[in-house]
Image: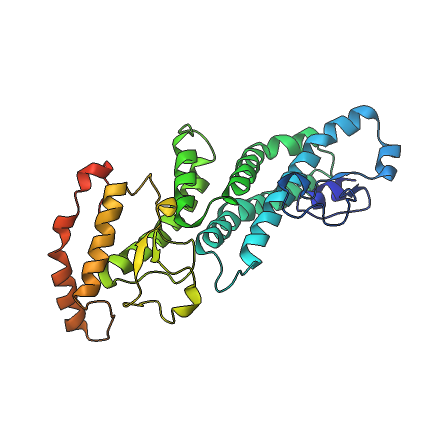
Length: 295
């Protein structure tokens, strides 16, 4: 029984702990229908009501892990045309590294402790040892649900709003902070390419400055200096970029294109000259209006 409980905490079924059978296709698209766990009839026939009740918190944790890991795997393996969604992929990859991997390591540590005690530790010991992990899985399960309806760099706003509501002592702050850092690095990479070289991602619903054409397939290169661009206001991360600053950023990258500085070259002296000319454009930015945002 103990072996089945431990394997269920890693998202695997056993003889005594199983995933309930659901109608075909009922799990697709509905977060409430992700795999959960329950005791098999054989286990129920051998356990008292009090024992079943004590095991239910572990089944809840197993279901949470299964839901989060399934969501993460779906984001990492789905590849919409023409490229995967970079922000969602980055979020999923970071959650796997800072939430799921430490959780799996913790299960292995608990299993080692149980072996040292001949498996005689009570089920409540398992629940207590996984208290922080349960909090994390609950939070990131909800976060991934909400992330499905968010597009591109606006995902930063979702994470930032959640982060600001957490108390300093919360175990969620550190892993969520890693997620924020990873997405911010991706965002500023795109932002710097636009400001320095006038380049925009040729993928729909990713960056708030994008080609005006709805047909991204006609654009052959990322630089695409001749492609008309505009601000997609629904993709502006308002917690980072104010509407007026978004207009200035658009103007800056557009000026780079007009000046003919939109091509990255191997010549270091040419790149240095280009960047020197770009610094002359910093009058476009008034950082005080964004509450400390630095370009």
